[in-house]
Image (cartoon, rainbow, N blue to C red; front, top):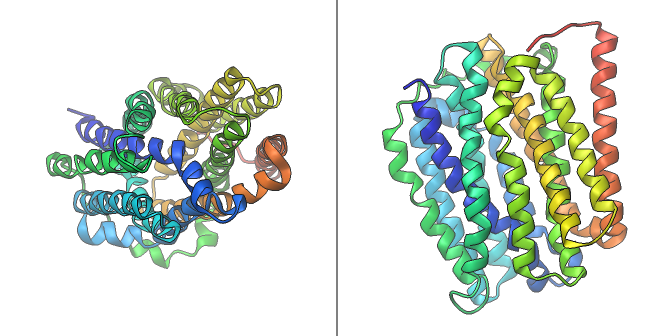
Length: 389
C-alpha cells in the first residue's frame, strides 16, 4: 500500500495526541493547584517544550544512526516513563516531580515531530508527500474525540484527582511500541547536512515562510490553548468543560487534514497556510466577543483549524525541497525554532495571563499572526520571487 507507513504513523500520532489531550486539559490546572504562584502555572509545560527544543537539533543525528522505527520506539518508551513520573508527582503532591516529568514527555513529543517527515520520506512522488503528511495528522481526529473523553472520565479513578488520567496515558502510549515493528521506513540519510550553514538553507525559496508558518502557528495556538483552561477556571467553568473545549480544539487541529492535503495540491502550500492565518485570527476575535461556553468552543475550534492550514502548509514546503541534505538541515532548524518559540510561549503564558488577562492574550496572538503574514508578503514581494510549492 502506498500510504501503509503513513497509516501506521497516523496510529502513533493518535496515541500521541491522546496523551497531549490530557496534558492540554489538565496541565495548567494541576500547575495552578501545585505551584506557589499563578504565574508559574504553565511551568510544567515549559519543561516539556524546552526539552523538545533542545532535542530538535540532535534528533536528525539520532535518526541517522538508529533509524526512524527504533528512534520512535525509544521516544514512546520515554513517553510512558514521563506519564508515570507525572502520576507520581501528583500522588506525592510534588510540583518539582511533575515539572521534571515534562523532560521525558518532551523527549517523546520531540521524536513524534518526525512522524510526518518519515511518512513523506516513505513516498517517492512529490505530489503524494502532502497526502502522506495528512494521513499522519489524521490520527489526531480520533484522538480529538477520545482524548478529552479519556481525560474527563479518568480524573477520579484514584485519589488525588488527575492521578488516574496520567496512569491511563501511560497505558495508551505504550501501545505505540509494537506498532513500530510493523513499519518499513526508509533509511535516514547520513547527516552530512550539518556542514551546510543555516544561512544557506534560509536562502532556499520559501524557507523563511515555512519556518514562520510552522513556528508562528504553533506558538500562538499554544498561547491561546494554554490560557483557555485558566480563563475558563476564572469564569467558573469545570474541568469537564475545559476538556470539552480542548476536544473541539483538537478536532479543529486535525479534522481538516482530510482535505488540507488536497487543497495544498490544488492551490499551493503558501496560499493555504495564509488562509489558515486568517482563520486563526478569526478564532481570537470570536473569543474576544464573549465568555459563554460556546465562545470558547468556537474560538478554540477556529484556532485549531488555522493551525492545521499553517502547519501543514509550512511542513509541505519543507518536504518538497529536492536537495536531501538541505532539506534535512532545514527540518532540524524548523523544529528547533518551532519548539524554541513554543518554550517561550509555555514559560510566559501564566505570566501573560496574570498581567494581560484573557483579552490581552487574544489581542497579542492575533496581532502577532497578522504581523507575521505581513512580513512574509513583504519578504516575497521584495525578493520578487514566484515560488510554486
